[in-house]
Image 1 (cartoon, one colour):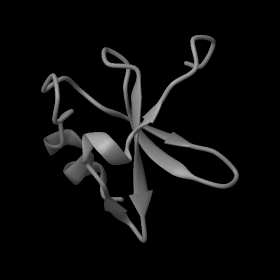
Image 2 (cartoon, rainbow, N blue to C red):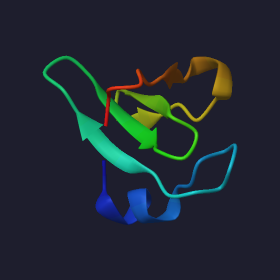
Image 3 (cartoon, rainbow, N blue to C red):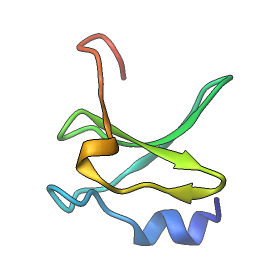
Length: 60
């Protein structure tokens, strides 16, 4: 994903900043305030609350 796009995107719930998080199997945009991770599928961020994964308490 283009870094310029990441700078424009905000959390759809709280309008806070998102961080790009990559693992071996997935890529997500994470809102630390709401503790949600929004998936990126085929290079397109899915910014729907019902598609977001709730972060575990020990996850950064």
